[in-house]
Image (cartoon, rainbow, N blue to C red; front, side):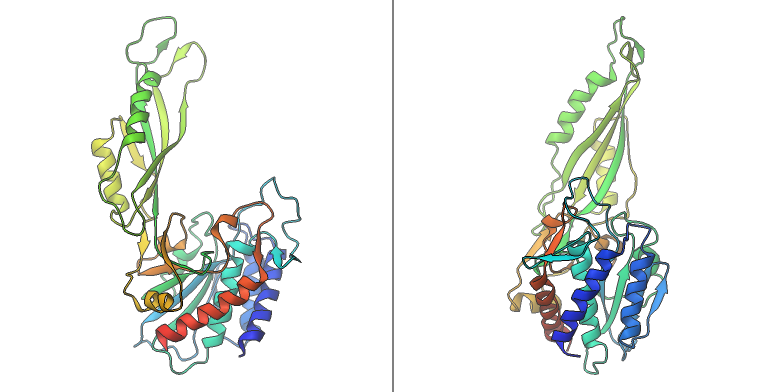
Amino acid sequence: MHIATLQIEALELLKKLIQTPSFSGEESGTADLLENWFKDHNIPFSRHLNNVWAVNKNFDKAKPTLLLNSHHDTVKPNSAYTRDPFEAKIVDGKLYGLGSNDAGGCLVSLLATFTYFYEATDLSWNLLFAGTAEEETNGKNGISCLLPIIPNIDTAIVGEPTLMDLAIAEKGLVVFDAVIKGTPSHAAHPNGNNAIYKTASVLEWFQKYKFEKESEALGSVKMTVTQINAGTQHNVIPGKVELVIDVRVNDRYSNAEIEEILQKEAPIDEIKARSLRLNSSSIPKEHELVQAGISLGMATYGSPTLSDQAMLSCPSLKLGPGDSTRSHSADESIFVREIGEGIEKYIKLLEKAIK
């Protein structure tokens, strides 16, 4: 199939995706649109919940498998929108609409790329496309529930807006709940164990603490206290202060190691991770996909934002048209040319890496 035809069809699909609400957990309509693409192109596919996937025509179990993945769910539009978030309108070369940049442009570009290679007989890798749900909420009915069903994956390209540069590493995330304990009492009486006063030194510790291991691609681990809660009324000294700590983990630590360090070193009474499953991701710079991208002029960098890469245990890179800074913004948009260029660059990358 000609690239120019796929570029036109991909843009039309993206418009339909924008016009179809697909908040996380409510993606049935956009999953139907992905099904229709495969039907229109005579490509067999499978669907599990709102996740739609397919493999290339000449899939060979003896070959390694490359996953092409992006998501079709969106966040809810914020209050600063001045446009209808579900109106797919092109103005001055920009396609506006919720999910256009995050990650509709990546999704349709990867789907067009998969379709371009679907019937190829000279691939050294299998291709597996998966359009998945619940990425924005790290939901249980997204890619994590699909992984036990689809063929084993050796490497993955996760479609997120990167300006078509190669995000060869991505920080993981651990959210901690912590408690500073004190002695509850009436505010009129002396209290040498005021949990709120004790919080000052604890906050200073979190602000100044540095994890030793730094990453070439991702820099240092970033730890931030993001929520604090204490007290019920003006004349009662509370017995505890509750904190929430957001930790963005580089590829030099596992999430379990971060929890172990904080439980051992933090000057706090209780600290516990909500989940350890969103680990950092990376792919060796020497990997053929990365080297192919570099040869095409793509830059490499480490990404601070989280994606479905966190659910994968194989080497993976994040790559796609659009700009991450536009994600979750009011009047979200993507340049029409970025869709066409994204498809061209994905195809060139795979031609260099797996043909």
